[in-house]
Image 1: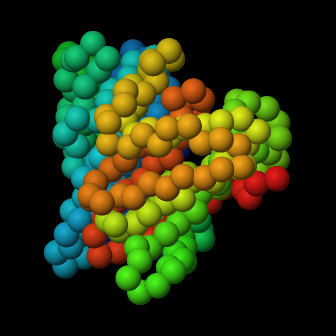
Image 2: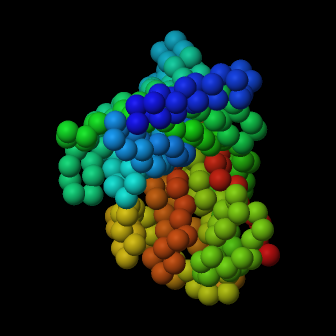
Image 3: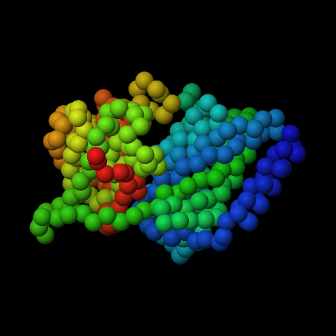
Length: 293
């Protein structure tokens, strides 16, 4: 088993050094990112599959170091889910390295500590790829972590304004067929299936117009995600509730306060939007979905 573990880490090291050309990640304060990927959680006796999916908001910058907060997300080891409770992320050398540390909590309420370190190995116009190693310690269990993860890149959008005195506006469309989960109406599975945009960063005071291009009614609420719960995926927090949006009709949502928002349709809970509201930053979109039919 030890030989297998050493082999995995050696393979990871070779992969990081030789498989990718040198790259540099440009990370700036007051922005939001999605870090998602998978790999292995290894002990002396077992090799387990593991996944990570977290939302990060960058904050203040000191020199080439940018302090950040993990707003939401989870880490899994086989069927065991750990929810983010008190994690901090630090971007070093403006994104060439990432350090994540703090505590996570399992479904049963047990607390575990997490220490990850990532190195940028490649980037494209839409995302940056990092190789991560680290450790999760849960009671007497200690797992060595090997991940390949993607940090979603940010692309600018141009909000519309009716006059100098009106708030910025962004239109998001509910795509036709969104009420049918898993229906193969969309060829590009890398894009949003249900909304024209599903990951956005905006300034406080921005108004979003939700247009229903589907053939059934929808509604949008804000809440927290109950990771691992198949039957009650979200818990509403009362901050946003649009009421019914009839087919062909629209409604507006204004984000007055800064913060992290997870929007969802309570009748079709596979439909979700992640919104980050930050002051003094351009409006941007992380997940650019397909246009409606």
